[in-house]
Image 1 (cartoon, rainbow, N blue to C red):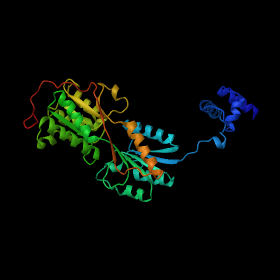
Image 2: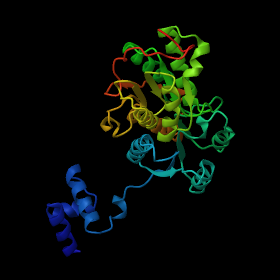
Image 3: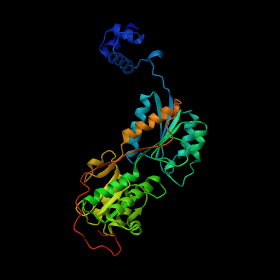
Image 4: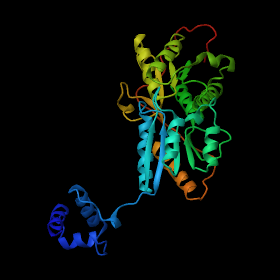
Length: 349
């Protein structure tokens, strides 16, 4: 034991007496010194005494749809870190096409007796999905929180970015730059995020440009989320002479830029493109992407706090917390080019 104490003291750069006080959990040692000694124990491979082991308050499931889109790892990182600070051990469940489904992950988490589950963009975001699966969890009862997946009738806390405002802000920005032919591309209409962005887009076009409602749908192209979907959807709108594109995600925006370049158009010289998310590395694309930033840290912390309230029996409000997106103007948007001939029936200034 004496030899081990000397090794630990040398590693932590403290006296053996200090090591003894920490190991025996006695007072008189600063927090920093105590952490240095505990770290030395870990580095040297010694097992911490039982009384010094940080006890887990339990497991919490974190279900995300994928990790290909960098916005989901961003959410996962902050949620996991915040859970760990609360003493909970996060269990990350990542879906992939043809892999384990959300329902299968939930069954695994229930087998592990998790204290609660955070769903990020789960099936609750799909308006055609059966939302009774969440009610069954609540009836157990099991605390849950849903991030970016609001659905009527589920008595749980929701944390969402204000997608309607995002659609409005994007159009308003392009109109301020002189654009009059503004298209929108997004994922399938069944998702609540798409419906809300479309509502904001439509509202802004009617308010800012007096575009008749009957003409707006012609300038909307819905497809699969992702770069490839964005490229296909943007190509159809570029053929109609749009000079501005509002995209449902940053990845779709990158696809739109690819479609523009394939047509020999420059971004932002000929076409301005706006994304959504402001996921990591988006500021370093070519060109740096103008986008609507989701306040990921604030949303993630709010989701964990709501879950903790539910777990501790305090009862978080069963309502939707809406977080305001921020327009981050970079180099993919610019003043509209000189007007070109456009097909008959398209919105005009």
